[in-house]
Image (cartoon, rainbow, N blue to C red; front, side, top):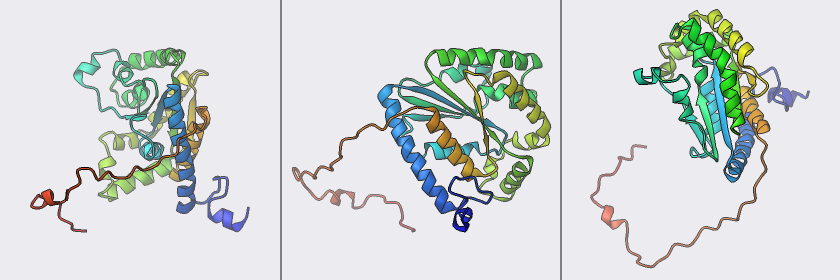
Length: 275
């Protein structure tokens, strides 16, 4: 590989060094342009898609989801990030509060954590019983079978971060006031219980990595590469075609009823122009 390619992280995005920001942004723009074409196809065909993002705390789910959604319409790519269940929701069938957010025709619903909370944080932190956990692992593949049979495309992505990188990210959050809000009450205990989360992950993958709803493992120590790899993979998993678009022409402003429309704003309250 040429020196120039190595410095840029490699043409194939698999270099050992950090991916240069300029190359990352160039590749990200290409992928996001394709996501816009995918968006048109989803609306045109009335597709229904669910994308589940799971992983340890500080694995990079938020940044990956942001890269996926920042250039597309929130009316098509809809993000669902549910808080802890209320007392009423705790009395419902477990998957009930997730199902109400499932996509209609022409929608891609992204779950930033999902029903797999039961396989991870709820199990490790003792928020569910061993029997509830066992039952979830047994029934989740059946439940997902019904989702797929209903014509919904289900994509499950697990972000895998290393012990060393998770520690670095937690320490960065502790030291940075702009990122301290990312430290939830579950984050620090999750750091302490690293191996318990590993065993919970292993049980989850063994029980729910099925042919009809497989898990895709995304290495996320390098955030930039992880985001690019994730977007490229999603685009590969959802077959789509580029739809023709009519050439847009900006209409001229009509002068009918013209008046000085800035005059009525005099004396109104304006935001101070401090910058």
